[in-house]
Amino acid sequence: MKKKKGRVLFASLSGSVIEWYDFYLYGTATGLVFSTLFFPNENPAIGLLLAFATFGVGYAARPIGSIIFGHYGDRIGRKAALMLTLVGMGGSSFLIGLLPTYEAVGLIAPILLVLLRLIQGIALGGEWGGAVLLATEYAPKGLRGLYGSVPQLGVPLGLVAGSFSLTIISFLTTEAQFMAWGWRIPFLFSAVLIVLALWIRSGIDETPAFQEQKESGEIVNVPIVETFRNNGRNVFHVIGLKLGDGFFNVFLMSFILVYATSYLGYGNERALTALTIGCATMIITIPLIGYLSDFIGRKVIYMTGLALMFILAIPYFTLVGNGETWLFVMQAVMLGVLWGAIFSTQGTLFSELFPANVRYTGLSVGYQLAAAIVGFGPMLWTTMAESYGPSPLVFGGFMMVFLTLSFVLSIFVPDTRKISTYESKMDQTAGM
Image 1 (cartoon, one colour):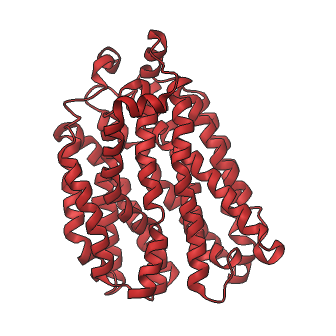
Image 2 (spheres, rainbow, N blue to C red; image 1 turned 90 degrees about the vertical axis):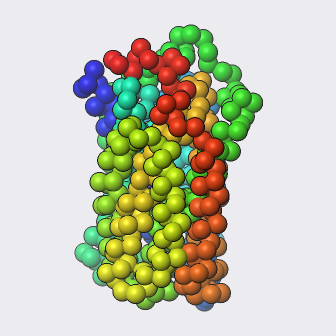
Image 3 (tube, helix red, strand yellow; image 1 turned 45 degrees about the vertical axis):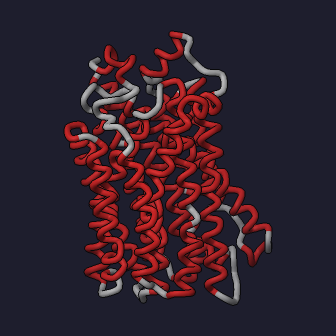
């Protein structure tokens, strides 16, 4: 059984890494490549704004994916849904690597880019929730926080892989070569990664929780309707809980590259190094805090993380402009430690709010609706930066508003370590 659970965790993590590799590869390429090759404009700010609009489209599409794959995940099975999300994500990324540029085909280029980004968003909208459930529904009793943190590692690992691949290619090519063909290589490499992940996931069984629902005949006909009928309050709870750290996350993992290079004067290498440091720190933080949450509870960690991010919001924006050392340190603290701690508990905390028959749908829809909102943060911040510059008060104040909302809502969430929908029927399988 231990070997079986180890493979399940590896399947959950490997697919998550590849999905986020594809998603954040696009985010990294947005400011470096797409704003020039697909959205050329005499005003660089307008080209950047248009490029980040397509970045936001990927986030906006994620709720659609959460409904589609949540439906399949709650009716047909977690494994089946997760196989489909991999194909959608990897296939669209591979095709992005083949796209002609605006110079070659005109408006067709950005239109095709947006369509493929939509497919990416839809696929990712179903991936995250399924990966979390693959881990948590196999978790032994008392270790659900640790197991639920494993697929969360896919975010920093995928981002590092995506940004690192572009960095390596840019180092090995001239600027002209990179813009001409070098940037395409990491996207084309997605095909190899997806085949590997499909092979890994094909060798696992369905989760015990879903098997039990199927055997007892408790599969619901329309999961999205059932979710809002009996668990609508928890869906909105998840949305509110995610907004605070979500906006900061998108900034720390995506917009920081533009903010640091375009408005603070850092070079691309320094900005990417800071991002990599934050992600490397997170790789350590996530499993440690996930394990700790099994002893002190998800709620305590979540509220503490939100409070500390609130306190450090304005200092973060103040210090990152005072030299690259501060940029590196603050990325490590805010992204690697504080956001990493919050994120490590999210999958487990949110999944514990929903019963098994709508868990995939409820978890995914709430999380991805919040993601759709925060995904347009870069468009807002580009406008803010053009109007106010890199103002710590403006940017820090923006983050503090949503962190406050999430903190207030977190007060009313139960301590799911003690009160959880998992224990109602999973006691006998948790100790397997």
